[in-house]
Amino acid sequence: MNVTLSPDILERIENEVSAGQYHDRNELIEDALRHFLDRRKRDGSRAEALRRLAQAVDDAGLYERVLLPDRE
Image (cartoon, rainbow, N blue to C red; front, side, top):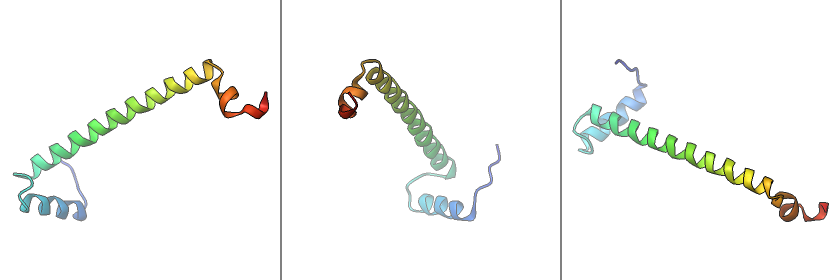
């Protein structure tokens, strides 16, 4: 796989590798992708949990009773 990265990103990668944070570029990029994919999965799970919570609040009529008490 070939990936084109901006000069800024390449410099940052080289700085991290040079600082001894990673053994090589591949290790850094693998780690970065793993973190990105884990975060994306976690964010998706949170969004789904919020949708379920919102649906439960709506089904129970709590939105109208608690958040809009003046409309009763």
